Length: 492
Ligand code: BG6
Image (cartoon, rainbow, N blue to C red):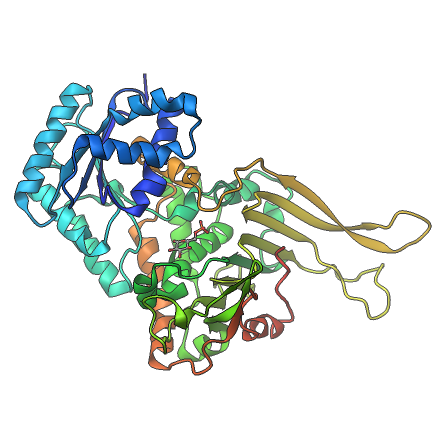
């Protein structure tokens, strides 16, 4: 059989990510028979825990979604799980790990394939990678891969340093940097929509597209992540990774084939073509926001500055919008507007591609505007595509009306579901790096957003908080579109 056969070592096995995303994802792979019996998971973390206690944790993290009759299957699944108390700075921990792995590889007939998944505090990423190599844990007959969660640094220099450290132990092609947006099915669909449809690709350029709008709004606030978020803000948390990745997929040239190398190299070219920002550009074309108190989904919520572990005078942005230009042949002059924030009116990730107006509109009444065609890609929570066109109103009239062609995926209506992780974890096992970020993508995105944070950090925003929780962000966010003669399309 050609199912992947490997051990997954999870660093941070008692953490939130492991419980919420990784165990359920691996369970789904097991249930769907995508992985067979030749697999094992070794959880490592600081606390002392027996295998039995660890397995109980795993079971409880996957059974929330599982019907009672699956209990047997879950138990069978949990027998592949092993726990090792671990100190990431101690060589003996790595020796013990190596022994355990060798032992399990014999027991489960696994040919030395080891996936190291770092689901823990980023300050140890470099240490772990280097120790894995130094203590011989990466020295096997099979493959070894490193999966690394965000944040990958907090600016270009720190990302570069981290990268240098992990590259001492792993080759670029064996490093899988997670951007969970790339695991979302509609994000993966962007390429298919573009490159498998004769009706879009010929129009997909500055001659026919007037602007593209990418919105990812959340209703949640900062929750219990104040400590991390204070240093990050929406720019580092969402723009550097998820937003720019969506822009790259929308703007890239058709790859010559669907290999990870070809696709990533086209995305890298887009990121290289993004127009660098001067201080003036940042001030004029990027807007930061911070939520104040308000009402979200009919409940009153507090402002960002009142949240736990947040400074009462915090200068951290919880909202960003901005205008990006991609200075290449295809996109010259076409603005890509991005917008993301917490505590906004609704949870939604959507892309709106606005086509240019016809040279004249025979149907427009005096003073009436043209109504452009829109292609809306609904990423979440709805998954699908809507094409907005003009049609004739039924009846004895020459008036036109907006019509929409809708295609909607059947979906699990759950945000940030294990589904994305399930795909990504499986891709790592298969060795397909397409939906992971290459170092060149990471470094180019950091250098782009570093230009923004440099300006924002050097001058405090005096008007924070500047949007009410439950709204669509600060007023100023409309200005950057107004200036180009556009407006944000409603994303309901
Ligand atoms: C994460 C951010 O990367 O993405 C979070 O750190 C954010 O702050 C999350 O809430 C949004 O993901 P999704 O899948 O819910 O849109």
